[in-house]
Image 1 (tube, helix red, strand yellow):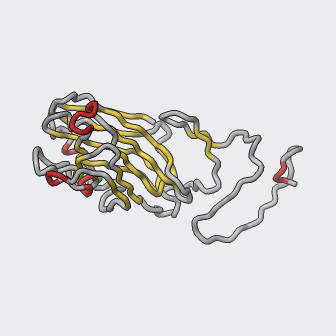
Image 2 (cartoon, rainbow, N blue to C red):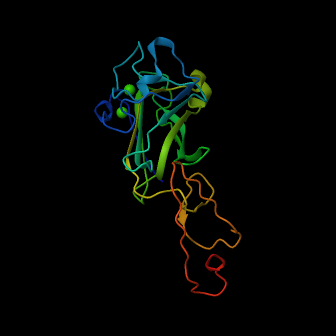
Length: 236
Ligand SMILES: [Ca+2]
Ligand SMILES: [Ca+2]
């Protein structure tokens, strides 16, 4: 996970960077909660493709600590979800440090029953001044995660709690391509910490049984593998 963080003392510095073609374009959050709807702020402005101007009414989405928005990015062309290639978030305001930003990202993979943490962002270079911030999340592997069907953003406290710890999102853009590799049946181990590193394969001495749960109706094909090494239990 690579977090690229930039900032500007010019409130509208990143106006031209908002995308109108990312995965959230045209989508309505499937679940929302906790946002501040005062002064014209709406949740829809998180992903409406518009940065917006200065001052009120707010042309953006005013956070509260813990406010959430969940989006269904879909199953994609291959019914395997999406490979997320990057996420871009822009915050901006004319004073009181509302151009700083802090949030978490979680994803739910196709076939999964719960969300898992993808990133924690904390970018507060403005102090209490006017300005804008932009964070871009990428990964050296090319994909932040594969097989993603849902993505959830949760605002966290900024400015040391001043202004109720709030800020003003101007846009969140999520970029990706339809997955071509299934997460179903793939065993993925991740290290702990704020930036887990996926490890595919390896030795799993404690694994006795793998359960495969298809998300759509399918037929099973029995495959028998010849034993190539002593002690391979699946070849019995
Ligand atoms: Ca917007
Ligand atoms: Ca957008």
